Length: 294
DNA sequence: ATAAGTACCTGCTGGC
DNA sequence: TGCCAGCAGGTACTTA
Image (cartoon, rainbow, N blue to C red; front, side, top):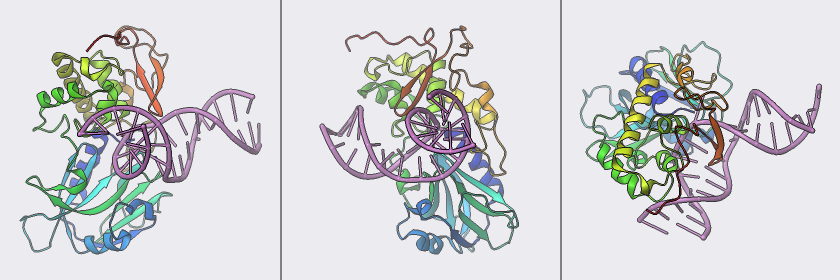
C-alpha cells in the first residue's frame, strides 16, 4: 500500500508527535510484526525502553527513528527504530484511552504518559525492529542496500539512468526494484510511465538517456505532487498518524482507471496482469515496444 | 551475478 | 444466501 509519498506523510507526522519523547514500554501483540528483530519481542522492548526518539528519517519506503539517551544532546547515533509498512501497515499516534484497533500489532508507551505510538497492520507484511546503524550516513543495516529516492536531494539521476540501461529486464520491473531507485511501487510506477509516455514492458537496455531522464523526472514529479496531496488512499488502509486519508487518488491518470479515458488523449486505459498484480497504461500514449535489436 | 518465481498474510468483492 | 476465486499499495528468500 504505502509508497514513498505515503511513507513521507507518516515520517512528518512522527516528527511532529514523537520527537524528544522517552519510551517507557513496548507491547507486542503479534510475533510476525517483529519477525525481523533478532531476539524478537523481548529484544525489541529491551533495546527501545528508556531510549529517546531523535530524528525521523526515510529512504524510499523505509522509515526510521534515531535512538538517543535522555542525557545526550545529539552525538553519535548507533541504533534506530526501523519501520516498514509493507502492504497495510500504519503508524498511529493515539490517546491511551482510545480503543485498540482490530489489527493493533505493537504499542509503544512514553514516559510523559502522552499519546502512544501504535503499529497497526492487517496483513502483517510490515514490521518494526531496532537495528544498528552503519556507514557515514548512519543507515540502518537493512536499508544499506536501498537506492536513494527521487525526492532525496542527493539523488543521482544520471547514475540511475545509467543503471537502468545496464539492466536486462522490463522498465517497470526495474522501477519496482528498490536498489537502483527507491520509493516507487505499483501505483507510482504506472503513473510515472504514463507521464513519460513509456510502456511498462519496454526493455531497459533499449532506453535512451533522454527517455531515462524523462522517466525519473516524471517519477519525482508525480511523487512530489502526491506528497503535497497527502498521499494516495483508496480506503482506510492508508492513513497518516492521525488516521486521516490523503486525496491523490483523485489525480491518478491511469492506475485503477481501466476503461476510463486517458486524461491526455481520451483512449480507454488498459489493464493487464503483471507480477501477480496489475499494470495500467494508455495504449495510445504508451504503445507496446516493437521488438528491436539492442 | 542477475533476473524471475514464490512465499508470506488478511479481508473484501464479484461471479456463480 | 453462501462459497470460492481473484485481487490488493511490498519485500525477501529461493531457484535458474
